[in-house]
Image (cartoon, rainbow, N blue to C red; front, top):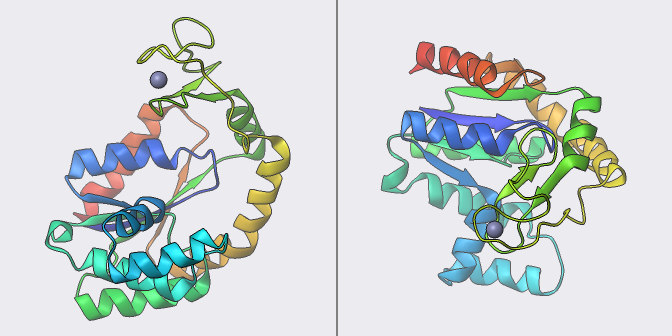
Length: 216
Ligand SMILES: [Zn+2]
């Protein structure tokens, strides 16, 4: 089963991606992790990407596209994959069409998490992270046992620099401009499943499971 997951920052993409890959035993591919892996293992593409990153520049789409093709063609992706954070633009969506065709692994579904702006604002400003172990908390819905201290490693929790309302607005503008046309693109192919992300986690995951069980 080959899937895409989309939704604005704070929509719960990370949480539901984890549950989907666990439940369906497919490979999670986030472009951030993929880039880091290529750079770390010094592949040709990784070296190319590192050049841009070290210069403080965005890694060009064609480099990212080649990495995606390389990754999706690996054996550990045979059982299926969940792409997270890609494609971000129509240009990348078109590239992914060609990639999936070349490697013979077409997209089965596109899960879109829809969350109201107020919920996003609320989630972003109440999120706290542990800079040491990466654990994520929410002072309202998922607080640490001792306020401000990580349950897992005891480090002090912080609010991420970009978890602000101003940054949310920037990300939402980018989402409307770039990602919504991508969703429309998949809509015409009949692949989009919109999920109301304003509900509790179990209800949301139940819906996702129902959709994916029908497909898989
Ligand atoms: Zn921690």
